[in-house]
Length: 239
Image (cartoon, rainbow, N blue to C red; front, side, top):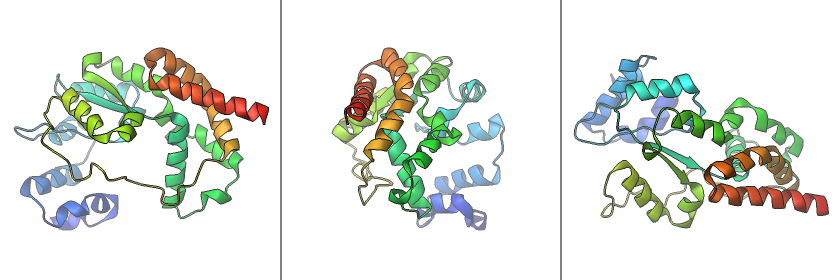
């Protein structure tokens, strides 16, 4: 039955696991691909692992509306922990759009800033940066003690401490465990292309209202992001 995985994104994503597969890995892949549907039973089966904590990770969870989050709530165990990692939306946009252009083998430096600004309103981009919406949506179904908000800034500052905080939140001890990928940077921009100042100002202005609301909601890093956006706009007016 492994031939069923030899196609498309599923195979490319999980092919490293198939070089020396474990039986439980193959069983999970079979459940994921062969029985895939929109039922609660199928979704619940993906977490059917005995004597282990298991979870799922994708930015798409942050784009769910109330119906989607309610589906998750009805499916997972009552004690399930939700981890949300936020990043300054201005730098997140630049990182995301650069990755998209690299994937399509296009040189982002040749693209007009106005065309890039238009990407901000596209659903795939807008939903992933609407932090206040996603926080309110998830907190409506999961209590704050089960809904943890973490920050990319802390990951960059000290990735080990960041990992330990998340492990404590989900209830495991990782003090004697160092994952092989701890220091690996995924989707890294090897050319380190800086964000043009005119684009930075436009993106900062686009997210300004959201950052004000977010700063009132969670403060901390969000307030720093707001100040960065305001400073970018000040530099634009004085230039």
